Length: 199
Image 1 (cartoon, one colour):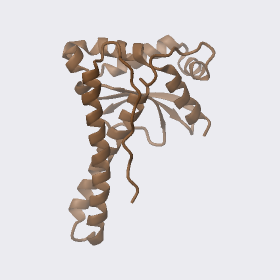
Image 2 (image 1 turned 60 degrees about the horizontal axis):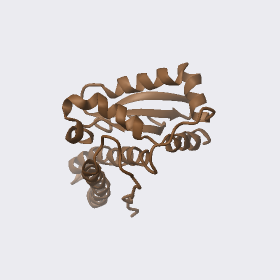
Image 3 (image 1 turned 45 degrees about the vertical axis):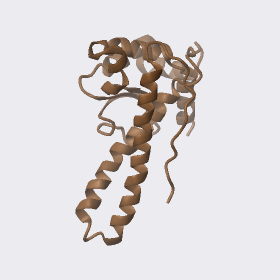
Image 4 (image 1 turned 180 degrees about the vertical axis):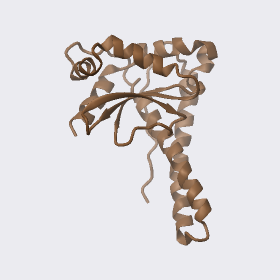
């Protein structure tokens, strides 16, 4: 059975987000990957007698989306910091697509930041819908309730308290969001878009 690989990330020193917080946050990510693998092993075991283990199989299968999406969301999140902050070039295809979809890049960015301030734990996400060829912003509760079927993740902002409280305290959520974008390598986001939109 294929195992999900725990990825390594080249994350430099970040503005506002401490090395300690990143270190602890990466441990959570690793836990999601390990649990996703463990669940698949258990599913294999329970599937040997689906009648006897129908309840267990159903419940652990339900849990799989939580662990799997926790793993994938974090991979997009951490990868967006790799190699340090890089600006989005004025003539980039991604910026052009955002402008066409939302009218203005800064207008979209403010909307995205507002979504990130949604009360509760979850993720602010930007997706590419390959069917309509459009960009969609979305709030995802926890990490699996509200994911958009068939869409490809372009940008993923972790708004669980573990992502920011140690450095910012609960009242610093807005500053965390600002610092996230200060630390963002937009070239990574551009690449996510180019890969998704070319399929």
